[in-house]
Image (cartoon, rainbow over all chains, first blue to last red; front, side, top):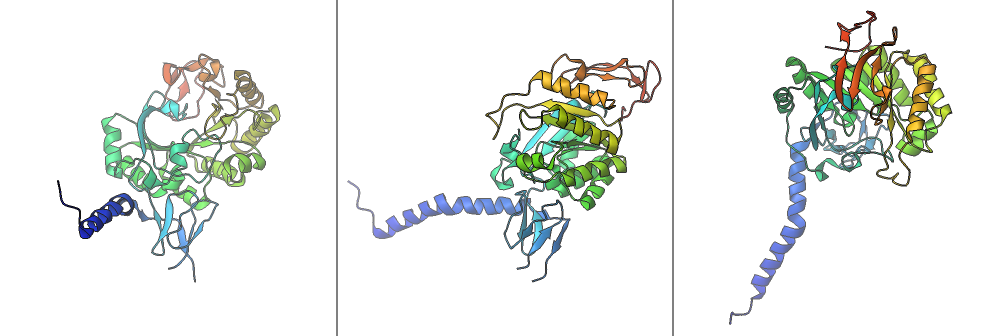
Length: 48
Length: 324
C-alpha cells in the first residue's frame, strides 16, 4: 500500500484547493473586469 | 481616493472608491468613474426593425441589436431582467469592439444598429463610439430606451442618433415610482427634447393590468402627447405578459389595448399601433389624409408598402418618418 501523506503535502494540496475554489474565481473576475472598463464621460470628481 | 458623481442620469450617484452606481455598470475606480461594460455585449441579435418597434423608420429593414448588462431603472415587469438587473461581470459577454459591431452589422445586411434590450444610457460611451463608426459606414443608429437620462448627455446622444424609441411607461409619477423606481419628470423632459432636436421618435406604452390600464390613463397620456409632441409621433400600445416580479398578473386583454387605441385616435394621434395582437388593423399604417392602407404588416413582416418618396401613393400626403 502507499505511504501516508506528509503534513507538508497535505498543506500544499489544501492550499491549492483553497486557491482554486476561492481565489482563482475572484482573480478571474478582476481580470475580466479590468479588460472591460473605460473612463466614463459624463461625471464629475468631488472635492474631499 | 476621491469620490465621483455620475452625471448621466437623474440618480446622480455619488460613489466612493470601488462603489458601483445604481445602474450596476459604472464604478469609481481610482477616483475616476469607469464604465464596466465597454465592448462587452451580453446580447446580440439581428432583428427586424419592426421588433423594436419602429414602424416609421426604414420599414422591412434589419437592425443589428445589442445590449450590455445593467439598467438605471428597476421595472417590475422587465422582460430582460436577467441582463438589465445584472452586473456586467456576471453575464456571459462577447468581446466586440465598435469596429467589430459595425462589421457584423454590415455582414448581416443591417441598415441600422440598435442599442436595446437593457438600457443604452448605461452603456453610453460604447453606444456613442459604435455610432461614430457606423455613420462612417452608412449605417444608421437607433436607441430603445426608457429615457431616464439627463439633458446634457441626451443632447449629445441626439447628435449621433437617427431614431429613438422611448418606453413611455405611464402618465403619473406614482406609477413611475412604484413600477420603475424613478420619477416621471426626467422622462417627459427627455421625450420633449428628442422631439425638439428632430431625431425620429416613436413611443411605446406597455399596458399593465391594474397599473396603467384605465381609460383615464390613456386619455391623460394622449392629451400630453398631442400637447407636447403633436399628432404625428407614432404611439404603440403593447400587451403585457406576466414576467419577473409581476407574474401574478394576467396578460393585458385585447379589448383594453383596442380601447387605448380608440382613445388615442379620438384625441387626434394619427398613427396608433397595437403590439402583440395579430391580424388587427392596429398593426397597419393608414394615411392620415385619405385613410387608405399604406403599410400592411403581418407580425414583423411588411406585406404591403404604398409609400413612395415619403408620401402616400394614393393621395400624395407626406407621411412622417424615414422611409428609405
